[in-house]
Length: 297
Image 1 (cartoon, rainbow, N blue to C red):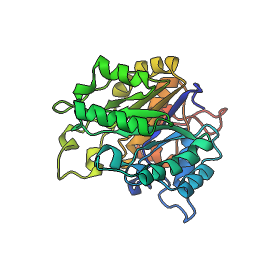
Image 2: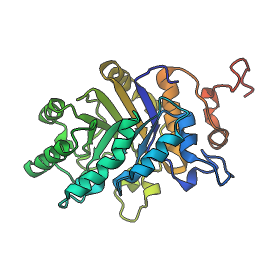
Image 3: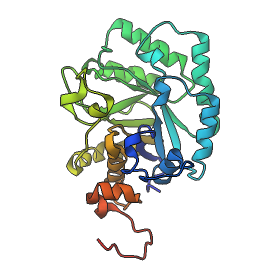
Image 4: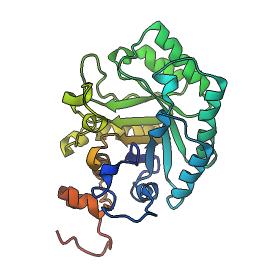
């Protein structure tokens, strides 16, 4: 589908009410399946709900079934915040809860990576390095990627530490505020991971800003073009490269993901009608439903 068998592009999450009428059809039946729809246009989705609570084995089985029409489709998942944000004492049962849901995806050959997302307040110091080692060791049976948002981690020692354990480094684009980490192109394992959060500096750390406001950002084509070279290089060095757009508000994540796919592969893409109506500038990258038919726009 994408022209490179080790390339996977998609959005972070799929359950957003504001996507209806922008990415999803405006009036859908009760049986409309958002995840199946996602798998029609993408080969990847990042599971966000697992950050708030581990998914059950039943949920994972259900998800696998719903994407079965796309044999390339993969899930990545964020690790439960109990291990990366709260950092409270966790139990053996907590670990088992995470594993039970992930193992279903692994056994179905649908799992790409487990993302350990740490906040910018997680600095590079002895205590935090010890905690990072502990969590990596706890989940070492899975393909791991670590997202570190503070500049203090962008050091050769960090990269060596991750390479020695075959743990990927999440290369993120975020609003760079204070000691926030800017975009990188580090490859520390046999998988590459890129996450695009948007660049809404004004709302990123505003306490009164809600989630939609923080991630309300639409990347320009020029901005997307600047990421092409690092991803192409990553494709040469890894068995899989995952490119995730987290700027979800008003369907901007699927919009930018499809634009990025076009810029990276040079191939026009399938576009849902609601997305084209919401963002008519996408007409130049749309693949005709009938390849023999000329575009009429």
